[in-house]
Image (tube, rainbow, N blue to C red; front, side, top):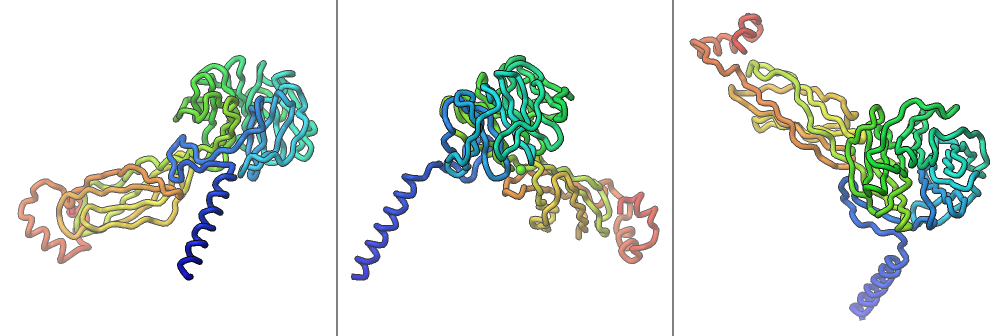
Length: 364
Ligand code: CA
């Protein structure tokens, strides 16, 4: 009887799980993802959807066939609201924290819109024909141009050009800002690129999930990418581990004294980081408290015997991605032969606070 109840319960839970999986609109393909891996996907509003942005809670996209702007639920792709776009060629969107910005290839304009009804607040001419996706870096507006293959940094008050760089391929279609880098997409190369915003140089790139990547939007360490052929919006992991930490400090010293070394690493995503240090003598410092990306952790250590040691350090970001090891070899004391070393060892041990200059010269 009891086994029967258990069996029925198990069958019921299995059916519930299968029903849930069947109606689940998204696919989680990789929980511990690497750079460029798709972790999630939802349907796009359909053919002609190209611009994309993230407002902190929802996705927004525009459609140049339907002349609409959509507010989209990121969980399942459901359309929460739709509005008429200002023009007939809506192909770029971004969110500045208060307003939506929309580029239009029909009239070659960039519109500033009220997000409650997509009414026009302001507008100016785009920097070139065929303006595509937009992004907002906190101060300036960026716009990809499919006609001349440039990516522009614009003054949002009048659309004047502050800076521009050439896209790696013709016809850049998507644009996003992750807080440090500019991301662009190209359906020519079917790649997604991260650019240094100061010179446009490509920092990293990966293959796009679909064959026609266009609009991009950034949500923390994820990039959303809409694909024109797949009619899907992909959520892509763009987290990277911290770079290899550096170690600064003495490479030789007095084994009787404590010395300080400084450990520094930065994270490409600007994530907070933790440090882990091994001193090379069996002693170590477990994972530290969190430091800002690029912030130095100073630590002191005293070796209890003469010798040559290798200090090593690694960093990990708040998502658990670990860097390579950084190394520094140190010698305690200096490796040259000191005459009558037994005498100096005993003298300096007995009087640890005298003869500082002599100590320094002899490497104690
Ligand atoms: Ca990271």
